[in-house]
Amino acid sequence: MRIFKLLCGAVAAASVFTTSAHAQAQKSDLDRAMELVTSGEPEKSLALVDPIIAQAMLKDGKDPTAICPSAAAAFLQSYMEGKFTVTVENDWCDAMLVKGYALNELKRPAEAAQVLEALVRHDPANAHYLIEYAYTVRLNGQLERSLDLYKQAEKLASKLSDKASAAHWRAVALRGQGYAYTELQQWDEATKAYQRSFKYEPGNEIAQSELQYIEQRRPH
Image (cartoon, rainbow, N blue to C red; front, top):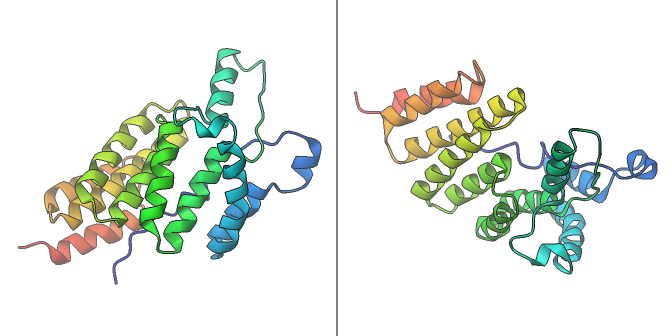
């Protein structure tokens, strides 16, 4: 069976910062939730992130236009030219990301889509968040919508200042496009998307496997 799964959601929450020596010495609930969801225990992961999100929804998070703590911290750091550091523990936006990932693991993509759609509104410039949302939209059978979101994510990724991150997320977004095109049986477009992804992550095994699948399935 052919499986294309996004394994970057809960794993790459690089925007989470710690706030004290105590927090650095002991893993936060969010860190533990990430480990649980990636080790196959999504139910336990949900139990840790739900309180983080619930607390946020009593404060800043209840505003659908509120900016994610990590995004605000990154903006302030940039504004202060790196001379000032804002740290965030248990970022509720990354908690929402983990929740969406966990719900997908539990085969509850409709619920995951609601969480991730709200998350994207809190940080619309985050390519990572948008990619996870695009993946979930695809799980819900909305291929055209998913394709559009992946294209938006690729554009966002191209604007990242960190070259390694930009390359990674562009490659992931292009592989997502390739998969959606394949499901739509738009073979040429799918092939182009995967081949373009090699520019950013040469020799990626997922892309290579998908190209082989396309060759086996497309009319000759």
